[in-house]
Image (cartoon, rainbow, N blue to C red; front, side, top):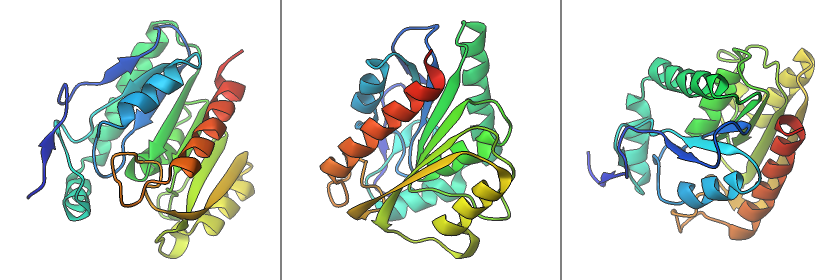
Length: 215
């Protein structure tokens, strides 16, 4: 595999903000924990949250799409969900009363999958859905940020996913950003980033998380 680069603190979860504040777990996309996630997490932390950013690729990341696809295919989904659970359990022991997740692409899929277990109070997913075979009831409110140009297959398509959420009674809000493509919020990927859309999506993410996690 080519185009791999190391990440800071490989395999460790990075924390931002004050312990005891409502926790937000930020889950990276298929490229891995690239540098842009640090300012994203710092900005979230400045809004009153403690933010945890795990490294689900155990020390590597990439800016090459083909390499990212290979990393994603090798991901141990069960182990990744266990990492999220451990972060949440630790935060609750440290007085975090409420917990949310924010995931991008692969991380958005993991966030939605994990939320079915009822351990979080809110979940935000960027350019991600669940297909029918993976989709159970999500008991927490869901916020979706979707690119205008993206690729979904069959039951993964956003309208079908949103219809299932509505059918299950899950509160859902969805936003589609005109002129954008998959990964538009990833500031490290110059080919697809859209700074205006990313800023608007971030503002909506903060408002959503504050409404569900902060008193």
